[in-house]
Image (cartoon, rainbow, N blue to C red):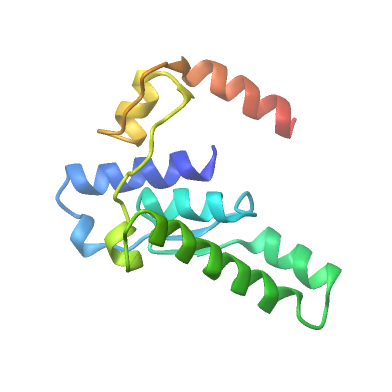
Length: 137
């Protein structure tokens, strides 16, 4: 399951059960390799993100400073995203759901991204499962 869907679903379930203020979400995400992925994960509820595959690739490519350069680039990129939206702290951005969903059916959006605009619809659970299975199969 794509990490954004997992984060969104867990966040929404915690909200529905009134447990969200008692739990933090820390995400280990192999599919988080750029600022957009990071912003989406935080925007849908993650309190911390470890982009482990990107960090591994950065270390393999540039052993001396690849990891620190990647972290710095992600931090600067996230700050730029926040500042363009007029947001000054990550805590104000976290779980703000300041997005519009593209390409997912209402049933997925209702479960994982409750309240997020979804004007065009798209893939349902079965279609999404088939795509994921083909990618990882």
